[in-house]
Length: 84
Image: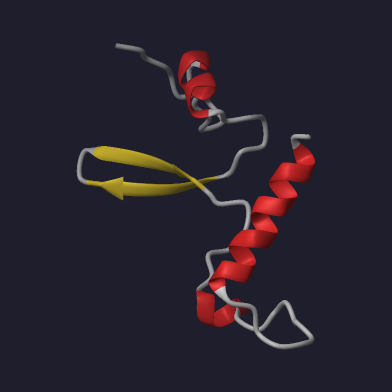
């Protein structure tokens, strides 16, 4: 079990093994949640959460709508170009 101390400035150092394991870099922001005897640090997402309704229509396409098969073919073609 790892332990840490609270500094006089209210700071806590998260042990390096935990930071590395979670891929947390300097400047990582957290949401702090207090629950009874526990404190939860949840990494803050780099972008605000959104829904599909908020972004639908963001990228415009001129022309007839593409089928799923057309999209799959375009993806396959791109991958083939990348790895040839």
